[in-house]
Figure: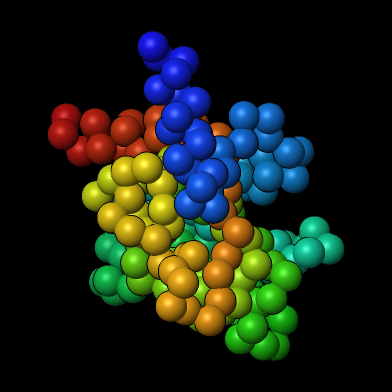
Length: 178
């Protein structure tokens, strides 16, 4: 019965345009590990450990960021927003067409919306976020990345190095609780 439920869940995700990669591509794993490193830096600074990296279709890193809400006292200082701003500055354009955003935690509505507005081609995230995710994971609050009413939709791959990303977040919050 467990295998049947797992297959049904995968089919439900695929019907919504979300893929869970059991066999990680080398590129996805490489860039997600870089995002995890940035998330670790955020945790060391007392921030929720979320890291993000933006890579061009040619494989060049053009943006990166980590959560900085506490340090900057800015509710919009999410890792994805920093990475998008840095990539736009690096490329000299607000359209990040052809780029992939790697992030350790499923983006919230603000960050998912920013990815759509930046015309990012692909989103790859680690852990799903049942409390704030907005990218169509099984536990998310919704899906802005593929909403039919929007003029741009992203290809989304969830669950890349999800265990590592989830462990990083759980360890951070366990440390806060003492």
